[in-house]
Length: 328
Ligand SMILES: [Fe+2]
Image (cartoon, rainbow, N blue to C red; front, side, top):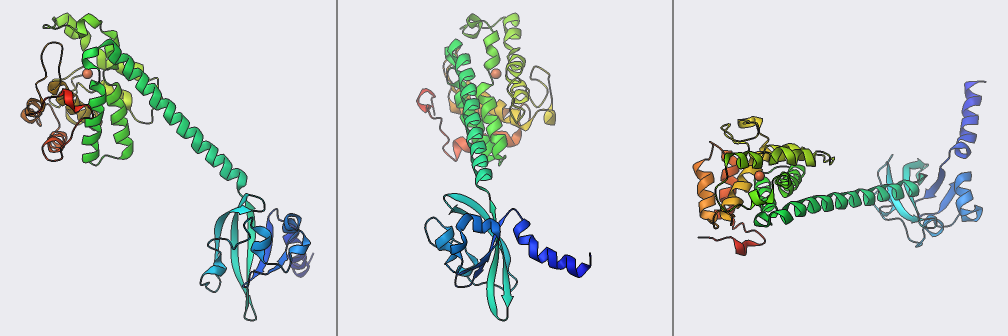
């Protein structure tokens, strides 16, 4: 077959062979011509009518139609339009044609109704999964606090403070969320410690202390089964580590401790000192801030301490159930 003949066949048959509806529309919106796919949808009598009158459910021009604004020579582009041909959605790819000073738009219609519905279903499914995960975290946190009434609300308050510190330090939304979840669950490992030890009013024996010190590891083991995107289990595992290596369970130092865990550690200590405990009354915010200031850069990350102190002294940070915590 000659190249010329091939070009002829190509020009004659392409429009009917493609699986997309196509048309050409004049600059006064008149439908000038269309391929078979389009004719199947709108009928042959659509020719010569206003394109929007036959295509759109509301009978008005498409928003952002190129004919509604200034149009450049050789302009091409695409737009997504809902409410066409009985509630369907299309991506319309267009190109300006100009012959002997007359202008028209060649338009190709790709039906994206199913793709948009699938995307929406996926978004709804993702939102439901997020709600399920949030519910799981809440249920686990409540379980731990039901056993240990003295720390009821502790994890919630630590989560509020740790999130505020993370936000003030400019951590990403994903890291802030990971810190919040880790904080809500950080003492979950205490379910392994007998309640009489947790609630003991007097001093703990070394054996009892050792048992309490297992809670970061137990917490990590409980939480690691949940497929969080972030290392929530590691943040929990490291929340009693201290910069100078004096913490537990690993005695990690400096940058070997995740920043998220360094933030959780400060929030945990401040809340714990400020609030009531079985073995002592609440000491208040001033005492809590004094502790982290004294050990700034020694046990606690200096930037985290600075952010925490500023939150209380300059930005008026308050817990949502503030009344139980004394202030100077
Ligand atoms: Fe803890």
